[in-house]
Length: 246
Figure 1 (cartoon, rainbow, N blue to C red):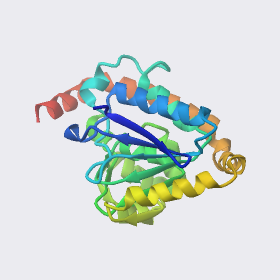
Figure 2: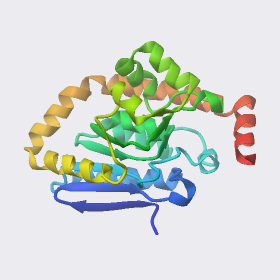
Figure 3: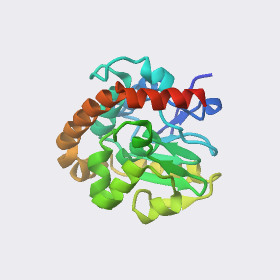
């Protein structure tokens, strides 16, 4: 069975992370599949919004580190980098339905979504420093703008877990709901968006986010430079090796 499921209905594409046995950890092939789905969304005249989700138990535990380490240099040809650039350039609304663990990229990708609905069992975490790494996906730019510098430092550097109620208080999500309802609610919102005049919705999204796109892409490039350097450091290698032993 595919680890990224894509379905289309009522003008909405649903992208489901489907690797629950591995806590929906994202492999390079999964990044490529999600990118292909988003490109399809952009090109289709019949699709006007997308929902990205996991299961009621888990959104994603983040990168599949073993696979990620085999992916080579973090150039513009790297599947993860292509996915991030695609997220930044997306002109149609992307809605997230999140439940369970949302770790690392499972939290940072939400910062590129236009609406985010989280279940009351959601656990967010940005454990980059704990792995000897640094923020990614533009989070070092987006998060301080949303929550303030000192709170962003706390979340990105101390890397403690936080729940959906805290995420709502910080304006990182739109609503806290039951895990069994999160996908239904997100889909209804996506269908609502799909019924609106498409050019109006795209123009509105553009006015909200386009002014930051150039700067955000520059920030992502800077993050990738630091991230790759740190990933090759002995400190990070030892931490990650210890992680695999566990």
